[in-house]
Image (cartoon, rainbow, N blue to C red):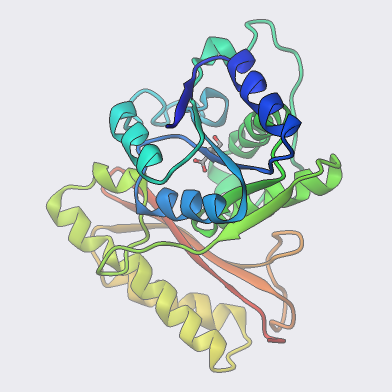
Length: 285
Ligand code: PAF
């Protein structure tokens, strides 16, 4: 039976019972509208921990003005059924009022790693993500927390926050789960019309080609990103925000040759929908 908790007190009560009997705890933070990508995180958490908490919360502090906070898709009954099916121990579904005091005064600012890629067009996004994730870590006190590699910049930022703020939590990055045609699974895919959905496959085509070039020894970052841009340019509905190769260490553009672990990431608007995709590559592997 999956417990449904709407308050911090209910989560703390369950967690202290589990801790008293020596159980390990995994946390899967989500914004709901769960799909196979989230399911794979929950499945991994269930395999690796005695108890698993899934948080479902569309976090207002990570949405900027004019972004899709209000229209972000929500379906709690579907989400709960998926969590029950995956044998999550507890679903935490707070209201914004439960999580945020109206006069809250504390912020988290992620410097450097939030300045490139999605941080350029979403300047407050990663500070909001860090704030809510830090709060969830303090409420749930997990041993491990699971994040998808689909949001690669987020994953690297959470790892940095955990290091910098000494959270005793292992951050586990989990592989991107893709649709049959290779489009990365995302709750925002539901915004796409039929024509846009067909066009969106161009993102994963560009990623696959970039990955092929990097694996076959191309070490000039601009050669890889230009080849990826050429693929994206063939799709008239694709409006490219960025295609970048950055260091996994500090998320700054690679200058010169690729000789360290990199993140190659892109963001593309298909119609009004902003989609992202990426790959990690280590030339020393
Ligand atoms: O990746 C997400 O869904 C969100 O950014 C997260 C980590 C749940 C924080 O709101």
